[in-house]
Length: 254
Image (cartoon, rainbow, N blue to C red; front, side, top):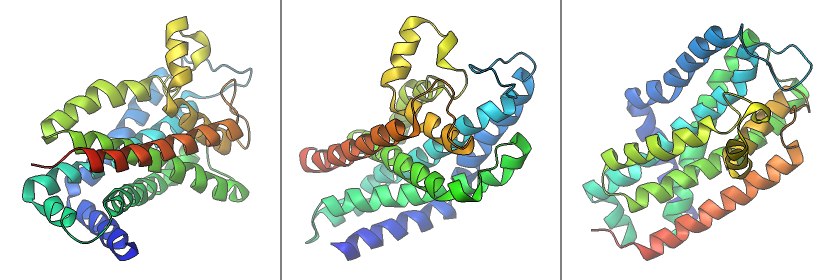
């Protein structure tokens, strides 16, 4: 089982980095968003605290989360591609537990997402958001747990969809709005009541808040505390792992 998990894990990492367009899309698009939106809104932005927070600094954690999201989602497209080429069918008839596929795929996407996020952290000094050395272990933990949940979500969606076109449609319809309503672009305090309710139940809200809290060394503004965010993200990751295992057992591949 461990050999199967490791093989699928490494295979997905190698495959992703051989496709340069996905690397650029997962990292380059969020960076462009950060530069353009951060520069365009920095003069009119007001944070939900008394401190004077530049919008580039406020938007930085949200962009980091967007990189996690894009990388996790782009990596799980391989589920659909592997099904179309017959690779998954071959793995399913092999004498290994099906959970190996779920864990291997999710670990592969998690590793890729954290690697891409680490590259973006090199730009943190430009946003005055460089993490302190003593907070790096916590930041790695937050990013890893959150990336695990996002990759699990991508895996579940990809397992039930039959085409990459449908996958991209679901991403645009569901995942991008989830990110927009996570506190990444604007704080919850000034939003409409129904928007605040959506943000409260959105797991990405807790991911953004946790990253922001670590980068600000314990201060998350009016958002959830770091402990609460980590608890929610852990539950989210476990739920997605279970959902992935159930999906593999339930839906038969054509």
